[in-house]
Length: 79
Image (tube, rainbow, N blue to C red; front, side, top):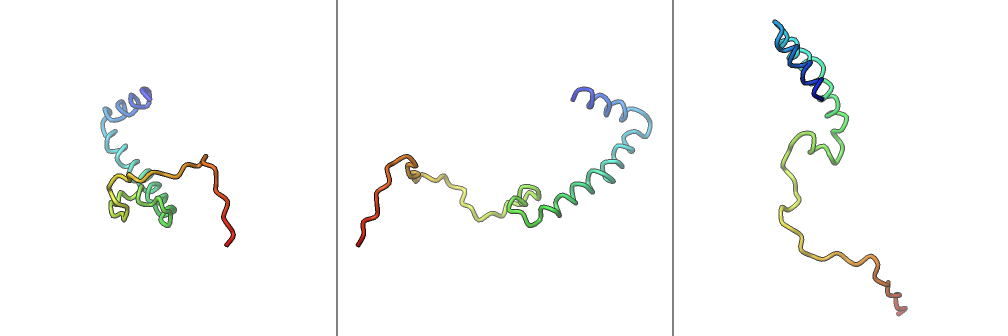
């Protein structure tokens, strides 16, 4: 990671290097990101990629206890 950061820093320091990195970002990375967003558009996790905060889930803590999965199951009584 340090080598990658150093390489980007070296590219930014040469004349026109920052503009070249900016063009690469806009031409390559943004287009790949938007294509990935379109692919996951129907996914229930699409809000994670778009950053939308419009959720119907309540923001309060659930204090109800969960059922014990290891508790013995009671047999259904025939009626």
